[in-house]
Image (cartoon, rainbow, N blue to C red; front, side):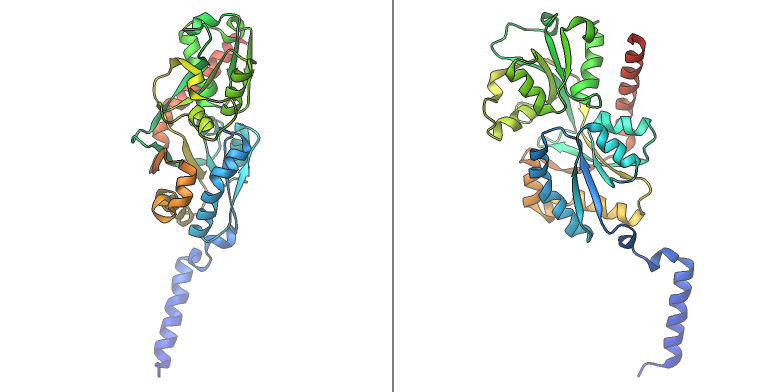
Amino acid sequence: MIDRRLMLGLAAAAALSLAVHPGAAQSWKSSYPELILAVIPAENASGVVERYTPLTEYLGKQLGVPVQLKVVADYAGVIEGQRAGQIHIGYYGPASYARAYVTGVKIEPFAVEVASDGSKAYHSVFYVKKDSPYQKVEDLKGKNLGLVDPNSTSGNNVPRFVLNSMQIEPDKFFGKVIYTGSHENAIFALKDGTVDMCANWWNNEDVSNLKRMESKGIPGVKYSDYRIIYTSAPIVNSPIAYLSDLPEDLKKAIREAFYNAEKNDKAAFDKFSEGKFLPWAPVTHKEYEPVVELIKFVDALRKKKS
């Protein structure tokens, strides 16, 4: 039989522990019975759902609460959703993360994509049709340019920075500048002749949005039908960021779930990565400071010319 004095002593110790550590009495799960993961629309909605659903199911199992995937209409949807505290985890592009940061959204990047070759960087490229006569950007005066979204890194901010370095003012040089909404739509606009050149993301000959579209079997989209006429300097890969005010133990659980996704649920990770990415690696805001400076430059450029 357990000594009654020992029982009383244990109860008193437990009460003292709760008084000193009141948070121990209540798990974060009671405050966060469901978590929302949102992703910028780098590809069309059906592609986002197909690639990310197994991942969100895996995250739910690891964290012990349901994780719902939110498909937003544009890049600003993730930014504003996190600003309002309605999106707990945001999958950003570098510039959209930087935009959230400079406009005061309280978030912290914790994971970065790693390409299959170990690279943590990608490029912005300008595509034209393979059979077109254009060999360089300067050949497209009066033609139509397809950009992606104002908050896209490779689809708007880097292209505008690059064009400025070429002393090209897009709205004066091109016949039209069209925002297509997603990287896939930019390719469709080029394929259909709506634009004569489009911006997009590209890692290498094996990893790009165009390669992904080809691998999906999208009719009329073949990598070999297009040419790159400009490739930017490296850009740090896309970050995942959670709300800064989440409980520390929840943040830790989220980090570990992402870092160990391939080990814990290879099928879900492979569906997301399509064999083109290694497991996510840790990252901090410091790595994105150059991108913050980039969007500040582009903003200043826009104000100067408006």
